Length: 333
Ligand code: PBG
Image (tube, rainbow, N blue to C red; front, side, top):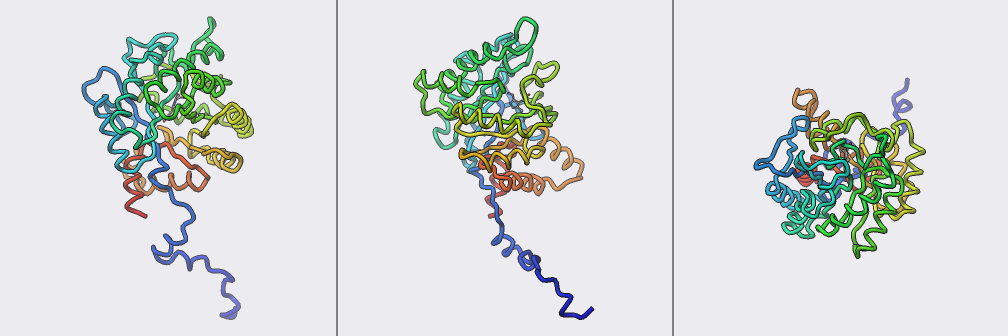
């Protein structure tokens, strides 16, 4: 072969030669303000309790939660998504602790709002599973099925107390039909027009939630397959998207993250509202476990996974690494 004739017609490697060039031509950047830190606050503990399956994650006391919120805000994190873990004795069939103005999530929302004001977007999980003794996301019928419409009534009440407690955004995560419209109407009626809804639009029934169940001390036996989506379905996620948008969702979410990047891309291409993705507990645990064994470069894997969400079109990323990642991203760019 002659020398000139064998040249490749194009040499993409020219743009990869030095770090400065790679930075210059990078198409996507995750920013600290894109990140949302999910955090757990547990009632009746004097010290934070580590979550065994999520090294580095704890169930916070009210006090350490306040500190974590300040740290996140100082790191430039965009938001906080709060989960309450009530005392076991307070769990019951209808999840009363979830609608008690003095329930753990509500007092913690007031704490955080008083501590950081509007420096972070304060979000709260709107679901009953942490508060029910059977661990389901709603109330049950006599024969043990989750009663959609009776559950909506409970969500409406939950929305009112969470908004009263100072949440800027509520995250209905129970996958009941009509939940966005129902909660929206309840908020309007209660004078909370400005509280936004971040719909868990495509929430799949996923094995990757395993560690979360430990984090919230879940009482669940069985699964959530009658209300969460089947991992086999992508078109169905688009139907959920149309419904949530028609019902008044301000933002929409895909959950989990890495196994559902196709759905995330579909949402980002189709909708005019901000799109979020939830990098769930199992995704976190896999990287942490592999890193602990020395099998993966932890920081690189964390940043690469965040970049993949941004590249697929996410505006917002819920990740347990939010505060640390914000620091890494700042150092990088
Ligand atoms: C339900 C809820 C779940 C998660 C967030 N909200 C778990 C479930 O559906 O069982 C999972 C989050 C994670 O795994 O990180 N309120």
